[in-house]
Length: 376
Image (tube, rainbow, N blue to C red; front, side, top):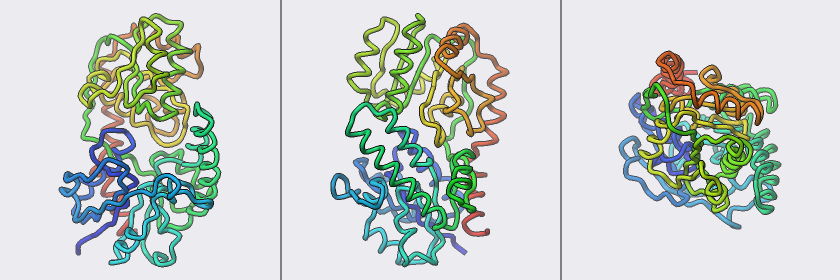
């Protein structure tokens, strides 16, 4: 008997050119390879229609988000209310196939009585209210601070109500799963690892030439981390430091240019980014947001040498033993200087292969997801 699945995606999941879209896209070929007939529904926020998606899906529907004032609600978080769509609801009601909702963003149907008896599943990419609370803390503008603070309040109430409105929830880390169990009393949440690119552990032994921070630099948290590294760590040590990523702000570029040994590489291609990660001696990846999992860390572990992080980056990821963890500014500076002169070894590569190859297996994770949807 054929298995059909509706997937509602918070963004168009192709091309997979930033961390947040990896799980959205690579889930599709993994499920298609297991014979699942996918009916994909995407909210387009400027990425446009992507014919590549037709290779893995029976059909692909695109919907425009209600951005700006059209998407504002006094009761629903903006990331949710801006994706409420009548056309989507009508398309889902044409059959009785299970519905998989990518992110809290796509879950308005969970509160719709017409879907009460439908099998519904939610992928929890973050504990969103915590994520927005931390964005509020590190935002640099008053307007953004007000938005993140208000959104966090709405999200906390929304996530609590949502926690018993679906058949099951799948968190990207054990840490996020525990929050849903303990704080929201969700008894149907489990951990499901990310679906990943077909990476192999291809780190280079020996010595690299610089330290690197990479990420989507238009995200407030990532910009804050990059500026923190410039002002608190690399201002006191004379070691080459590169910041690379999408859409850096003029402020960040100006701060990097003020030092002789630091610079920003703006909007590198995928090939250029991977080349930077592979050539770096230390991937320095602090985070100031402890929810979800950091794709930049996984990329560095598969393709780079030493990874220096803080606990917010690594806790709950299952990858702690593959990282060097620093607790404060002084420790970061000390570890940067140590690791910059410490060759990366074949033994460290083998340790990564042992953990990563076992943990991030798209085929095994697709089978686990299928079992949860159709057999349990």
